[in-house]
Image (tube, rainbow, N blue to C red; front, side):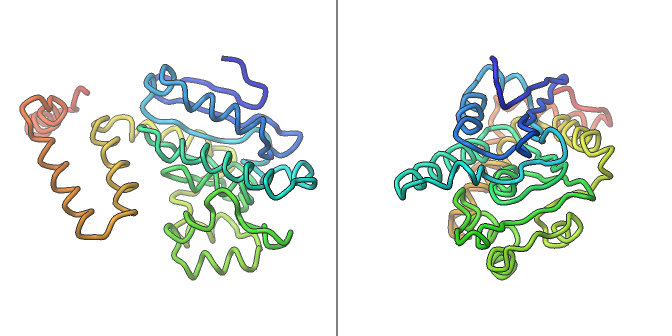
Length: 258
């Protein structure tokens, strides 16, 4: 599979997807979105890994959308671009495997929205994050107005979006936007170590946790709780060898063989 804007590497059960448009700080355009959609739709690739790590080439994770390309958009073209971006980021959010964003530099606008669509975010201590669209007389267009409040709370989200100012990785960590910080020179190493730890857990259980959290956020609390109980019970069916292996390994004080 050939890409102009992406690079993919596989290390055992971990996949590393790198946005590779460093001359434009990995800015998002229709070409990038089309390649991302193609990659994410590849069942052969996705089913061959247990965790996907997404990062950026050069000094930026993704510095935002391609503003120059947006300059001449009509209302319909702007709507279509927003929908394309949301569909791709929803593909990431809905992947059956966990996705870790390794934020190596600027994650602004669409870049932060990309990171928000991932399940876990690890950031370089020198990274800078933000949704600065208001400075252009715009709003986030790739679900940033929806995902950020769910992650950091409505007040924090409106504060960041209405001011349009970037924040440091440390500030993002304090707000719960970022789950782990790393020195710039070891960011990928730290992210891969985290990915390997996740990959060492029960693979079906990890996938189910992602489904429960994603679906549960859209349901009333009582309904979400019932959904959890139902799925927990299903794991005790006779054909659930993963659960049997996990419990046996614990009782026998050994590592499980997934």
